[in-house]
Image (cartoon, rainbow, N blue to C red; front, side):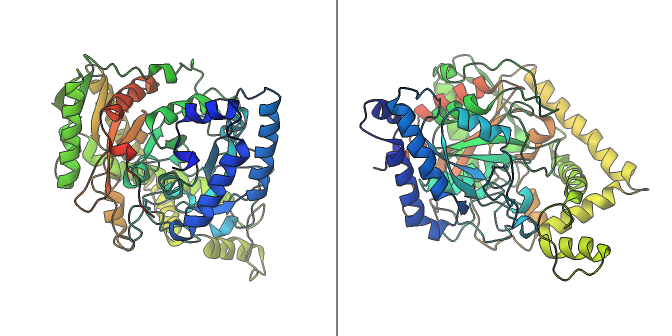
Length: 486
């Protein structure tokens, strides 16, 4: 068994008993990356020198009795749109191929306070635009359970790295399901926190009103530890919520007696793969046996979520990505002779097809004469979708459904069909539009042996409830214990 398969508490106990060093953990992570990442291709950058240096420093801290960090010594991967000082941050885009930041994001600062070790930066769909990690400007990432299938996206590299045992945990970002869907496809746990709970400072912006940073882990307990470390108000982020942070670890009691669960019929209707629906219904039976009660409900505006999301996110992307122009930072086209050439050629050569598609869609939706017909109408639909959640949460503690309508599909299967790819996000997008928290946990396997994710959705800032329910389910099943064979 790998050292990275141990429970967090077991690792910390062994560290304090001097049976294990942080250098051992980091060495195990780097060895595993060397062994399997040629197949998985989860990483864009591995900072071996920096990781070994940090491990040596933490070993010295351990010897001095200063190992008090919540995530002490744990090797971590970071999605490559989370800014890291002196470590290349590309957003998997050629336009940022040479970008090395001079500061850390707040989430990275908090991980350093928790004394974890950053191993490197993980692959993603370019600027977070995609659901399969096939839109990376460098190379696709492959699902550890089946190397002919996608790992999901856009945090596909982060999910694949955890599933393959390359690091202990990773951070991803979620704009429309980009943590939860790859977690589902790769058989790991993915948590999208409430909008504003985790600082977005240092997260390279795609759609600012929708996205946030969250953990991808092997189990629910680890998700609680990582969330505890990275949550909290940040004065650098104007959207950061100034709320009290509870003890998420102590919420894992296993007691869900009397918990009220809503199951929207729209989440288990047409378009849901039969094996996925069976897994969801089986999960409901497990929770029912643990004392929860459930009822089918309707969320009538769910069918408009995908259209509203792609209008709003593309509009925000059109605005946010205007800063990448070949002038201030990033790659500048060597073919440019005039200032206009710098703008046009740098962006034409630097951005991939999916990014260009969304910039064009967003620019059109924001243009004079179309703003009211598209962007404004999408904002009104977003309000209706949020009201659907508010209405359900008046009577229920959480909402349950599939994380994704299908299991992982084959590489190349949907890459030339953007509409089909977009519709795959139907079960994950509404939560970003409403700003509510959601978690994906392993809940079964398809006939082909591919993981299935169960999604639990909670009230704003009710991550403790979500973690409690997810942990209770996890402890009553064995799905999270299965590992891909590489």
